[in-house]
Length: 385
Image (cartoon, rainbow, N blue to C red; front, side, top):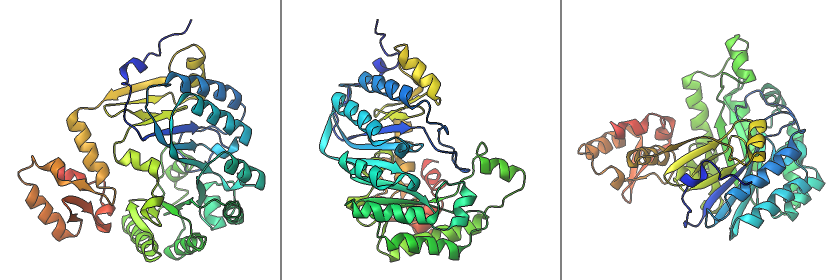
């Protein structure tokens, strides 16, 4: 007997086109020291996970009109072999509708990018590769607990280019213990020498439940103070803009607008997206819901005929407005002034923030400057008081 999924009756059938689809693949060779995303260092549950994922995909058949972005993240999606990835794609295309120009992204580990894997991804139609390089410095990679070394990343990029991939994103992390600005610039110089279409440069954030978090609690590692963090951020933005990259979101840079991450822009622009797999989050325009942060619980629920949703929340109009302002001020597109017109002190606030160098106003949009990006967590509060 098929049970009605316990949360799906709350979810409207969306007629909106161009939604985003995220598939969480929570398997890794080993757990990186900084990683707080849900993943497990084992391949053993993969067959059971694949069967459960197929069931979950079927639950959403017909509930979203179409998707124009597909993003396989993790974890390490490229830990799966091409046949297993093809199994996922066949199921997705059998139940869901995708636009003809769908952005088809996959996160990749340099260790996995041998000729066979690269050819497999190309044959499966992926047109955007997000490579988790993190650093071109072997000492930094060891600090982060990465399984690869700089030469592995170099070979992976070279292999992807040789195979004809023309939309490559490179992920990097800065602000590591013992890292200086000069070493960070060397990593960025190496990255841009490959002319990637996209770069994501993240400030290292150490969460308590990670290996680095436990090391910091024991006083085994040091991290940059606030002024040094500021120097890393400003250096990153200035360096990459000088190299021709658009700093279009706090941590993201693209060669041109066409290379913005279409999928991630949906999160920042409040566009509906569906997340499948353990710990994945979804948003239909009015509600958010999220899956169990456990492969076992996720698979058990679906095997028994229930949705693996762990929780949900509805958003009021005011909550959506607040989120829109907070997210918009993290991007180069900024926020439409009309979203704040009810505020009688708006003009004064804008004037003060412009004078302080935190925002500019263009075409009735409030846009954070580089200095504004630095205080992005506090900047929205100025407009929400």
